[in-house]
Length: 401
Image 1 (cartoon, rainbow, N blue to C red):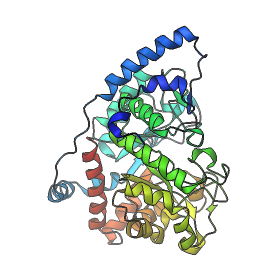
Image 2 (image 1 turned 60 degrees about the vertical axis):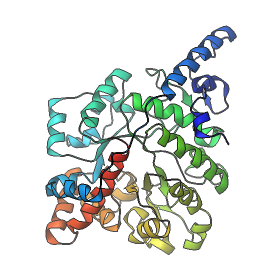
Image 3 (image 1 turned 30 degrees about the vertical axis):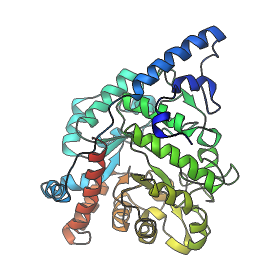
């Protein structure tokens, strides 16, 4: 295995044309034009690789505590959510292209002032071209917010493959032999366009390349997945992009897709520890900053609840696997949540169970009101919220946000 310093000098864009894990939608270049492109790519990559690394801010726990205690209750509560730009404006879920927020507007900036959420997540409809998305993202990054995206490679991308962007398009994780190169390139272009958090890599184990996760996973062998996760997490950190292990406790063997209803894993805790948990334990050992919990019901552990709402599963992640970073839920737009729970109920349950951030509650205003009422009644202590916010602030500090 190459060392990190050696890898930083790899002519990455040259490998885009040569390595087995990537391809571009464009026509294959001729031998002469390819040589020119490879030379240019090598020079560009060497220049990019020498960018100044992010130096974590030296902040004491007391300073974080002072910052949190200076926040109003409303500021604290909104800081527990990551939402779409449309949700900030109280809009319905986008269906058509014109339904998506694509530009800074006075209404959007005003909403950010009144609803200071932890961050936003962008989908394909929000992204038109490099100049547009970079300018839109500045509205959020300038406020110290997470600017998130799903850019896994393969079919799960918002920028890769978009003809308006001159970036490589990579095959899915399960088809990629060189995740270091793939996520190096992805980290580079995401940062160029103003993103700071990628909901990748997938730590699930596929079921012989199939199942709900399929080739989004690195493979069906836990050790193969671990090795590729190690490379992926290393490069994300080296290039200052926040990575996310997902979807704990492991979506690979689930029957059902949480996008459309309940997702069930019929295994005992011991069975999970011997298989599904292995890549997550490895990722945590390697310093993964964020873990996304999926809407996966494991009856022998979580009862009838999805893991996102389960105190037992959150406790396993924190205490048994020793994860000290930020726990985020999978999207609460998914039917595994909306079919059974209201926005306020689900958001409160997730935070009480142990999540630090709720992703995309179906109704942000309802979620905010439910959490505020719980704090005011004493059901959810402000001290618990403060602990979540300290973890979030530490993460932002570490990545210069």
